[in-house]
Amino acid sequence: MMAPMSRSPWNLVVRRFALPLTVALIGAACTDPPGAETSETETGDGDGDGDGDGDGDGAPGDGDGAPGDGDGEGSSLTYWGDAKPIIDRSCATCHGDGGIGPFGLETWEQVEPFALILAPSIADLSMPPWPPNADCNTYVDDRSLTLAERELLLEWIASGYPEGDPADAAPDPTPPEPFVADFTVTLPEPYTPTQSPDDYRCFLIPWPEDLTEPVFVTGQIAYPDQKQMLHHVISFIADPEDAHIFQALDDADPASGYECFGGPGTLDWTGRWLGNWVPGMDPWRAPAGSGIEVKPGSLLIVQMHYNTIAAAPVPDATSLGFQIVDSVERPGTFVPILDYRWVAGIEPMTIPANEADVHHQVALPRTHPLFAATLAILGVGSSEEVDVWRGTLHMHMLGTRAKLEVMRSGASEDECVVQIDDWDFHWQGDYMLEQPIPFGGDDTMQLDCWYDNTAANQPLVNGEPKLPTTTGWGEGTFDEMCLGIVYMARK
Ligand code: HEC
Image 1 (cartoon, helix red, strand yellow):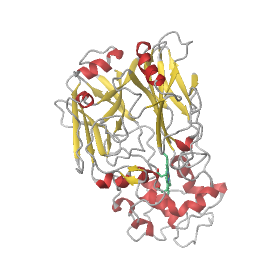
Image 2 (tube, helix red, strand yellow):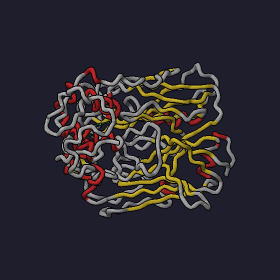
Image 3 (cartoon, protein in one colour):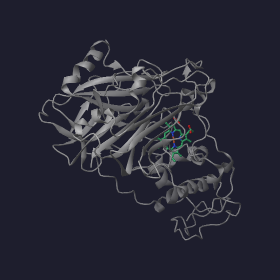
């Protein structure tokens, strides 16, 4: 157990501040993140001072006369002894080496001048960004800080963020097994964003010709070239017979690639979702024994989201690496969860102007034709149980919260796949479940999305908040979506 945290000014600060890259982009949408109650950050009750480390946690800084001692608050926590491993793991992945974070946190020299301004973001849970609600499910590679880690960092900062002795540094953790790609592809030519601040561009890359047999993709890594302006990379795969659909989109646009916002340019799943990358994400890996089939002669569609609000547009030549195998035990595929009547305009997904809490919902039984069509590639029967392994949610700028769950017939509790309580368009990740959720013949998958279309929640256009207008499903930035993407595999 951590020692209780001492009372400090930081306890009072529960809102993030300054450097509002995201806030500027999404207008005033930024609200307090889930769980940012004062009770979570204010765990100390005034008895914290001078508690030292008598809690037997063996903090490496103990008993060595660390420079921090006597620094006012009686904490003996130091950078080298205590804070560094947490900052390295949870912050430096984005804050460093040309990463997306606005300043580096990789070395003591970088951390020291920023230490004071780190506390509010740690206390209000806005850093590190990790949108899923922890009560919904547990995920692999959860990057959020534990309560103990948060308290440790806040106590260290409040006590004057002493450096301590480099000799106390814990050995660097064993690095994760490196991702070895079987082959790598690069954008057809370097691309310099022309749309500001957001440029969504799709590029076509033929599947390697020497792959003359079907293979299964088991992992994907992005090698972002110009990380500072890269917000996401999503790859889609079109079967050989559908390749012409995307080729036509590319041919119609004179510059390299073509503009595409909500997906690869079509939403009929002729471009199947293959893998993605967002800042701070590890390589995409399929669940053990699973992978996505790709036929020879297929076409890769790579959607890039460039954001140039904080970085000048420069030529980008991002590459993607893939791991492939000849066969897998449990073929898998990503499946879109949405109501096709919205897309077709049969049942428009209307979000009226000036309404603050608009709700749209779709409930799809396992036997729904959508699953029959998208799961055909797995060769499963129309009510056969499959496993749900991974999920993500997608809305645009007006979204406020969303939830995807499996409603189990006859069971008292539904199983939550992913839930985001404070939607932020710029932090879209996808989340790999620690345990798969079975989705069988009697079950239903339900997606709920909420939107705020009042003046207070409008994106900026030329620096001015847009006027609320009634909107609905569409690919454009100012249209909306209510979409889930889940990875399903054979049992
Ligand atoms: C996944 C990438 C990522 C990780 C991990 C991350 N940050 Fe950030 N951080 C950003 C980005 C991007 C910004 C710029 C503002 C924004 O977009 O929210 C930022 C901004 C900040 C700011 C400026 C204030 C603000 O909230 O905008 C602080 C302070 C900060 N980060 C601290 C931290 C700390 C401390 C950690 C680790 C506990 C951390 N960050 C982990 C990406 C990250």
